[in-house]
Length: 413
Image (cartoon, rainbow, N blue to C red; front, side, top):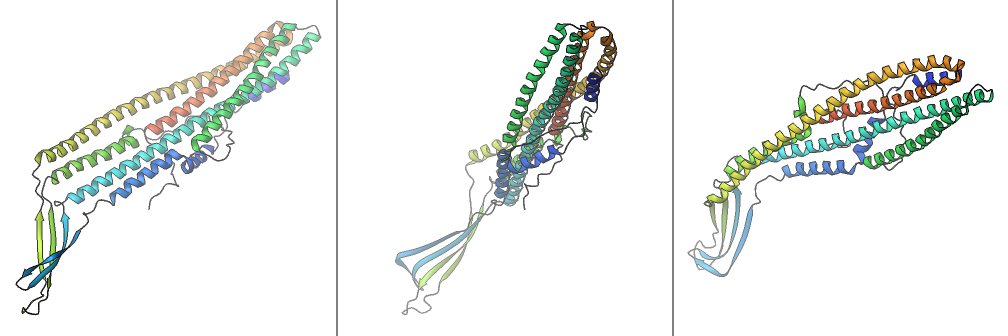
């Protein structure tokens, strides 16, 4: 019986060791390899390149040749060279550049959200694998203790101090423990493979997460969900849409065209002062006379801004609801952890008391076995609540946009 109590004491000590640094490493590997994150970063780079495309229109150069020269007072005009450049209304290009910059900023925030969501998914897998790792440890300890109980019950039966049914009871529990060990091993392998595909790792992952039962210290939540990258992306899009309204108004104004015409005059020896080429500066204006088209463009820009504002409000409401749910789940898990720790302590004290009773009366064997199984059940529930507590904490940080891990693989010049 001393062997049994020793195993119980070992199982109850140091339930969760200090958390290893595996999670941060998984984040770094995913930053380098995850294809969805790479695609989001490429889209951000596309948006950055598009800001450089907001320039003046290319100048126009034309060359004309007269098949039949036109006779002028100073000679025959045989050709003409024209060069012109169009200019939008004052301030149009500046507004367009600002709008493109805000769209690039929005793409950057969408990339950050993709990264943060990926990190949250990895954390979920990590804590689930950690919980299964703890269940495997508990079930192995359960198996050892049941084997010790079986040996003890067999010895008592052989000495006519126990009943055969005690051996059968513990054998049933032992068979179940062996089956659960196999199930937990398969579940862990499946989750590790799913995680490997998620981070797109070319190598097999060897994980043994060790998760602390203590709560993490969360970052300041006073900023609310306005710091979430999705909200920040919508803020940038709204700024770009407002600038789009201003651009639409300016495009309803005339555009300028400056140029120069060069007339090529053929020299005529019979005419004095012939062959002098002619230069002619030109100035042109576009005439925005199709007001319906221009008003429609302004109205479309205004409606886009309005739609984005509504989308921002909807996103804030969704994120706020998710934060409240995660905070409730976090508090619920913390309460459950506190209760389960007390139950485990009480159950272990009960087993210690039953040990003496079993030594004197074989009728208490069933109760010893039941209390032992109760302790294992409570510890498994504790492991589940610790997993859910950490997942809730990670989700709150994700929803509030408070992931602080830098993505070294993604930098722009």
